[in-house]
Image (tube, rainbow, N blue to C red; front, side):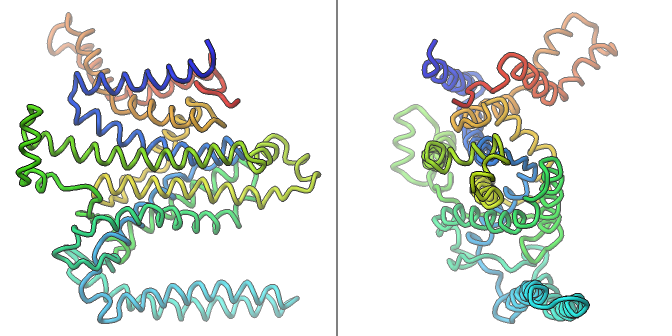
Length: 445
């Protein structure tokens, strides 16, 4: 069997899984799995750029995904009434600028001075800048968080459609996707400048810690996105179900297909999301393939395989690592903005770096590290398994224990064990793939 036929058959198998889900569990469930599978494929594509192209071990994926979600809030939500007019938001921005200026000034002084004067001047700038930053920043935070904390308490976003009509500006949500990529790329630049000189295992620890810091900021800084109180009601780039159900033309078309308006409207919105997500995935996949086959892509793989030899030939290894780290993180940021758009809310507590970063890495390894199509396949397949394994495991345990008496300890234990089927299946799948296809289902060419 040729590789093309085999790869096509693997994608066809995933398509059959989704079709089977639609037939046996309902098309709403199938489309929801498809949409999250497409977003997962984009995350896996970003990680594959970093690991498959350059060998960078980044386990801080959820931090960049969370920054993408934050961008969706900052772009698509309306500004909080009073936060800007009374100067609270401006004080926050000024405070942040003062903090950044303090760091930049300290770096510049360290470059200009020598000896004990350099240390003394740097310490003086940092201490004075810190107190100035806190004096300006804290006053703005206190003011903003006091504005209707039950429903606001944050600066809001850039949607100027008004508190009543901001949902009509759903197209702004599409703009938040590339903005999420830019926000994640900016954070990746800062992280990369400080952490990419570390050895791979230390880089993994550093990126995990930084992801935890990012998520901790989202949880605790209420002025930014309401923290653990969550931001809900984000506008959508697709029609709302209620609007479709009140559209006489849509109701008539749904009736002609034998569907009730509620079901038809839900399917329509999920299909619209699927089209948007597919377009984004195809564009990113095309760009990643172009990069892979370009001289730049061949150079990245040469650096990955032997950094010493590549550096001896005059390649800027650290600079190229920074490039690919920024690009992969930007893709994860785009995926994070898309996920928050699909959910319609930002929930910082849902970003669990260890759990979901592990899942994205399973997608890349099972699909095929170094192969963009393998990453996409792994994202779609692993997400389907992640959703379906637990209910399927419960059904299996009910079947196997059907001959046992009700209330028996063995039967109860078997049914309770279904809750652990997800992690068991992921581990078993990893073992099987690494044993029989160690380079993944669609290996690097």
